[in-house]
Length: 247
Image (cartoon, rainbow, N blue to C red; front, side):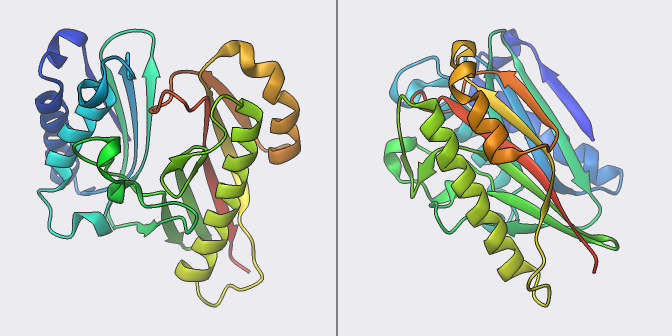
C-alpha cells in the first residue's frame, strides 16, 4: 500500500495533476513488482466546487481517465475506488496494489460507472464496483464506495436514511453477482463482512441513520467519516470489505 499527496498549489491544472499522479503511481508499483491496482482511495478538497463540467470531481475524472485509458482493454481491468471530498485543500491518493490482477466485478442494479452517460461529465468515472481476490484461504471482495444509485440515477435525493437502505440493497446485489459469476462451484456459500466505512455528508444527519446502520450492518466493524460525496445530491456512501472462507 502506498500514498501520494498533492498540495493545493499542485492542482492548478487539476486534470493534468491527476494524470501525472496516476502515471507516477503506476511506474512506482510496477518497478517494485506490484503492477496491478486493486483498490484506490481519493481524498479531494472541495470535490463539488464548480458548476457543470467545471466541477472539481468532473475535472478529476478527466485526468484519471487519461491515465487509465493508456492501457488496452482498460475497462476490464479497473480497480475498485472511492472518491470523497475533504474540507481542506489538495489531493491524497492511497493505493493497494498486487502482483496479480484482481477480478473486476460490476453490479447488475447499476450502470457501470465507466459507462455513465454524458450528463455526468465529459469523462465517466473510471473504476469498478468491486475487486475480487481469490486466495488460498478463500476470497476477498473489496467494494468501491457505493451510493444510492440505481441504473445511473440518484435515488431518494434528500433522504439519508432511504439512501442508506438503497445502498444496502445495492451491496447485496453485488455480493450475489460476485459469488455467482466469479466464484463458480461455491454455490450456497456467502460472503461475510470484514468491515465497513460509511461516509456521511452532514454530521447532523447521523441521528437519522444510526438505527439503520445497526439494522443493516449488524456487528461488523464500522467506521464513520464525515466528508462530501461525489454527487451533490448524495448524502451518504458506504465502502466495504468482505471475505468468503474456503469450505
